View: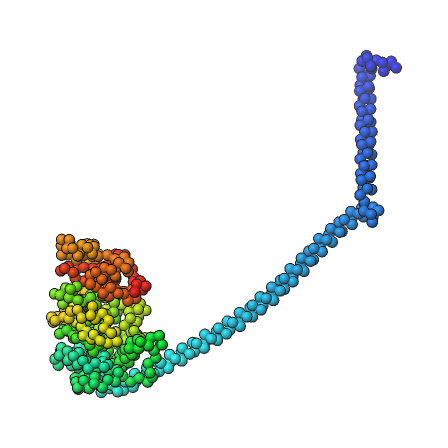
Length: 503
């Protein structure tokens, strides 16, 4: 009692204080332990009550209930997976079947297509073989017939032998053309320039006229093994089909049958200039040497006296446009064309890029031929408006004594292009109203087909295109003469190539 009292009032000794403090700590720990035990019992009671209230009806132990829930969830998961996997496998199986069927169908289609292609190739090869065989037999036949022809002795003639092949049909006026050829053919050179007249049409009056020339010419007449085939929609153009067939037959006969290496092709309605033979003979070495050329023509499409230099009879040009109307061809070039010769419109066919192959022809400033045939297959196309105004050269030019190597491509292109694009640019109005104060060459520029056609028509030039090439054009440049001045109708200086859609 005394210690408790002292403790309450704080009057205890030092040793007793320590004892009292230790007793208090022990008492506090006991009280905390009892409290934690009490709280734990309450929590346990609540948890037990909760588990009993929510346990599964089919199970008496919570452990069995939890296992049931777990097993049920796993079963549902794998059931769903099983169902989905079954559907996917079924779809994959169906897809695999469809792919197999499609592969089989494609394989059958390709097999049939391959058979069709092979059959077509066989037919093409057989047709080509038959054609080549026929051509070869014809060549052999003609060569056998031509063994006694004077051309077989051409090695005795100094200079090249150049045959003149005249195409005739039903015009007795062919005599006008033959008279000029015989007149202007160099004396004592008839074996160097043999004249061959190929006649189609079986027109007896024309045949009698040709036959009247006797030994001065060789008269050959067409012989075809079948009728000409003309598509129904082109019946009214049958004449063009006949002309193409005649050309093919006659050139084959002349090159392979009569065995000439060079031929000048002339229609029966052409007049010729006095230096016609000199012109071709002088240019023969150029044609042989320059593989970028495929012909020499005596014709200038823009050869009207109003738009040429009438004093430049010796002036010659390169042209990308095939002129025709008196032109020289080598056997090498005919061999290239003969196996694919077209059934019609042969001249436009030659002008196509796949035939021309960027090769050019030589043409004169003043024509060495002129047509007098107003009536024919073309029904006088361009004749009244243009062709009858073409000037025929009258001055003899000694081309065989001239240096014509300036016409070789490597020499010609550099000088020609420089001359054109160093000239001053003027307008059509400047040219027409006489406002140009000098006589030097000038240039009118065009950028489109329509501008070219309008300008050409205003200047009196032929304004049409063939496979994108303007008549007389070289590198797109058309040269002509106007008011005593050289004028170039030219594209931009960066011109690269022709546009075949310009036609």
